[in-house]
Image (tube, rainbow, N blue to C red; front, top):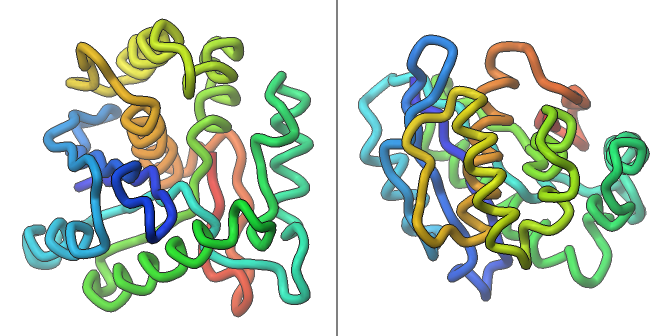
Length: 213
């Protein structure tokens, strides 16, 4: 089974998008490829290169729906409260329609649609939260809070991810987007196996994807 973690950025800032492609190996994962600066076309190419009917699960770090009328989804409120209790900032979960997030929500929904159009029934998609997956999974919370700006925090988190059964994650100078994409893959792998640290099930039609950490 293929597990793909995608740390998504907005549609005009694709240089910050990282896709990590993994192979499931028993109870762990092996990183087999990484695409940095991934465009929508790159995501299409990754899907096109998969073996026909191969089981695939993809976790996207981006809102894949929004609340009709605006504001938080029920899932956003619940996850924010959960992560604050775990030691993260309330800003760790942002409202999908707020100014800083609307473009990411737009791309998230667009990429999810691309995957649905190309993937077929053997491809599953979830919305994931990499910081939440690490903090709720037992990673050092200080490192999770600081990994976007601190190289040592990123090194600590990659070592932690390796200890969770992710093989081949080590990088000499990892970006924060790479670390997040690896955490997306781990969150997706846990979701597939039914052992997410936090899960908000899909609520069709407005929120058609599970949201997991």
